[in-house]
View 1 (cartoon, rainbow, N blue to C red):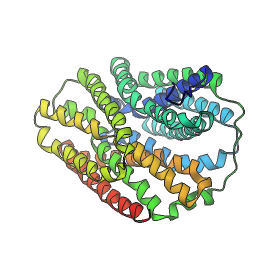
View 2 (cartoon, one colour):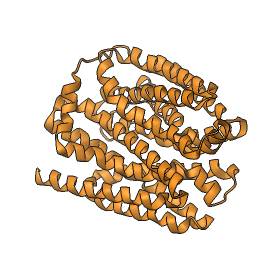
View 3 (tube, helix red, strand yellow):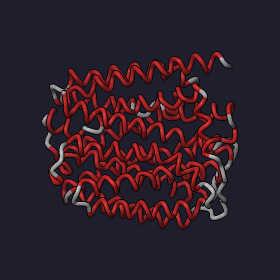
View 4 (cartoon, rainbow, N blue to C red):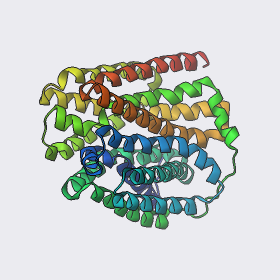
Length: 397
């Protein structure tokens, strides 16, 4: 890891980067592994598909609501002890999920696990930013977030396959084991000299009194919600609408994950030169792709092509809006930049929760075939907010 300036990371720093990427991979796998197993969970617990889908939206809501509040409450504790404690809670939450035989217990375990995940993700971003050379911070933070994408390519399909082969409970035993590996790596690599900082919840939340911050928070939330109206119910769509055998679900999720990796790589290039301006139109394209599902889901090949294009569009906004939120915080309250950095994953998880919930309503009342155009409407709303954000941001420059 060297660049043109000759700056490189030490072995210890490289191991730390690996541990942080592993962390986001593990938490991402835990959050989304249930997506490919909704039918199995619904059948075993005798609940509806939409109720099973609430296990996705409930997790995301817990991250979105709990992360900023808990972060402020516990930020005075050192990162090392805080991270390891959260990972122990994460492992316990996944074991409880694996042992659950009732829906309320499973939902409760998911909510507790979600709050631990959200806090660990925020700490991981802070550690990456504060322990790396200035020239490497952007790259390392991007790698940390890339762990989620890797989870969608490797962790989720593997967990889905394990769950389909041995029962959905086995998927949570799998994520619990991943958590143990991550715990060991974090214990070895995390710096022990990072002290906590005291901050007021009121002062941090004050950032959200500025309407450019509000726009920058909700635009990515709407975009990811647009995708998750469909993605949350991807397994039922594949099996019940496209009539593709369940044994191929993992393979299709791998292909979707590969498309999302390309999306992540393109996001960096998009952000390099006025990404906010470009995203106004990217979200319109996303809306068209999602709406096309209404017409393409009548046949397997066109339907799968539309799904892969959804994967190509899913993360195009992430780098641009992550940097935009931090830049805005620098203008309004420089001391709140860390909190601003935590707003992006909160925004994304809020979007996931809203998208999954809307997808559940659409699925229950008008059918899976309609999830695409409903998602398209949300993508158009994201485009509108981005148009307004761009106009305000450029006007103030």
